[in-house]
Image (cartoon, rainbow, N blue to C red; front, side, top):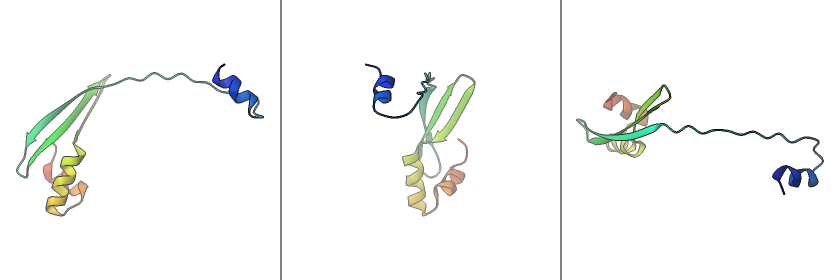
Length: 81
């Protein structure tokens, strides 16, 4: 029995919408960067005309905790690798 049939028998709704979605996964790699403050991981995702780069959260958090600064300040301190 389909989900929509189950739904119709258990509710007073008069219509059910159904959508199909595709998922596109970007290629991903992690690089290790030696900075003045510590070694951090830099994540790079790319594909389908998109490229995203950012620090690994745990590494950024560690820098922020060690220096008693915010995550945004830690990211600015490290700069764009």
